[in-house]
Image: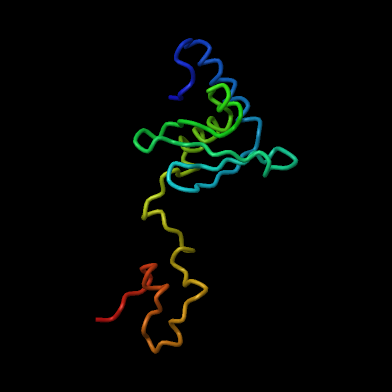
Length: 137
């Protein structure tokens, strides 16, 4: 569940429902900056870059913990950014804690600074460090 106010459960539920409705009305994009730190951009605004906030998730429970938006910071309220992240992680759209198994084909591509071709079969350091190739014995 969310971390909305525990003093008045009815008010907390209403705040959560309002945040959920607002999250559904807006278009958001997500970027996982680090495990459990999701940059949320409200793409519905004319200048989306002015509406970017970071939502923090608990690494044990995966529950949303905080947001850097003014609504959450000044009111300690469950906000639409938190609701959007919660929905995206619950339905599998967003992986907030990527594992090594989540590597993409892009991760396997040779880096731009790869010099393997000019080393007569010996791997370059960027490929060795990225575990794409191993040093020969």
